[in-house]
Length: 132
Image 1 (cartoon, rainbow, N blue to C red):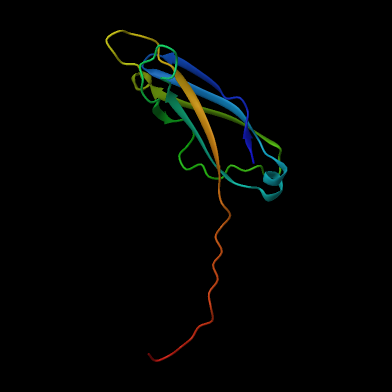
Image 2: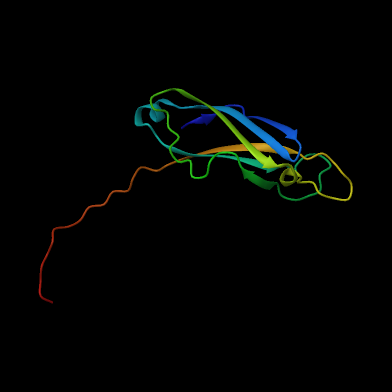
């Protein structure tokens, strides 16, 4: 099964825009390389609310960094694949800690790879013709 190396997130604020860059490396095992196993690859930007002092609550998904429905990630016989994604968000959309007291927003990039299962097998019987 493929593995994901360290994920690096950079966010640059420029006016009303937030420029998000995410880089990481995917490493494919020998099965992935020989079978050219395909994966659904997703990189999401998350508002993190798990740090010390944060009020209880779930992390908020803020948006996708990868294109939607990216289902063809495969090794093509190579042992590694370098990934670099960039996307521009509205700055206000990344303000995940809204409240009466201004505080820094905590952001994370979360990358997942889900194997695409091999195609299903279908087989039909012979054709039987009857007047029923």
